Length: 187
Image (cartoon, rainbow, N blue to C red; front, side, top):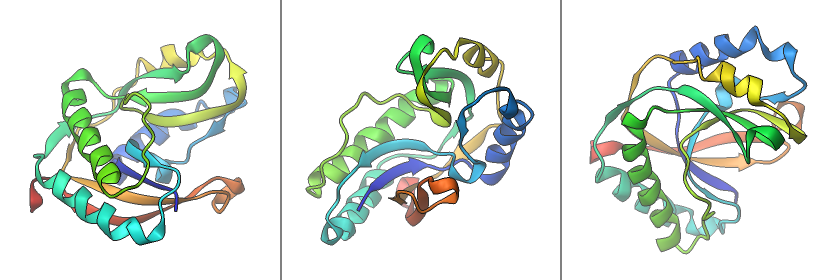
């Protein structure tokens, strides 16, 4: 199984970002993320044996119970690996929420590792992917545009464990299936 744990922005937050992007999408030849796929990945595991899923879910719930709800918003932008040869365009979060998201990510990654599921070890950078390029592209103008974006605040009070089914979504994109949501603070 291909799994990730993420913070899913509420529908109104996703719709706000989608509205900002919608009038601009035709200006670039990029593969744009649809609003129902917006998420802040905390941990990613490309290959999880199905029999480990219950353990991942249990340990994710334990990790989430140790955190308390906090306020976040989507704001600003960036590109990976860098703006002059980017393949990913993203919206970030203000620094006020980064420490909480980093703590959630550490807990989520530890949940996978403790359950015996190899987790991606890339440096955590809280972001929502909004577009991808099939080849490296200069996206500096797009990053400057996204730097003007500031979405509505919401309370992060849960995390989701999501299965990613490659090629099963619209236009052969991944289809995301929420397997479980677990509350922060154990409520």
